Image (cartoon, rainbow, N blue to C red):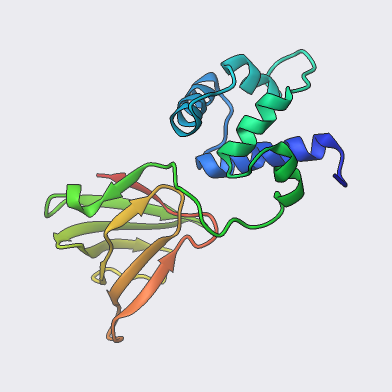
Length: 187
């Protein structure tokens, strides 16, 4: 390892939060993480251990090898040693452990609000068969009245639209929230 352990611990915390799709700051956040790790790996560090690893305890803390190995496994590394060696490499494939919405669960006329950085917002209406119409568009290249196809929304992931019909152009593909992802909410 060519960095000190503190730098690797910081990197591991960032990788866990990125994998989780949320920052971890409250006991409820850590309980949520414990459930995700338990579901994925069948074991998990305690609430107190997670809080101390994130620096939310007053006492100094040196995590056990087991703790950092479990957290490394959660982010897709074999163990902490592999995380330290390979942690800076971009992961090309991974399971997504985030809230998802399939269009199969929507009724015609259902409305969603989509938001992404910086300050972009759309309200869309489900037309059926995977198609949507944009009802409102703020600070985005998309426009009111555009239609597109999409079958799945995943919190904090890029949103890929297909067969986008936009202002007289032939149907095109479009990605929203390419860097930081898109948030959705049912209205």
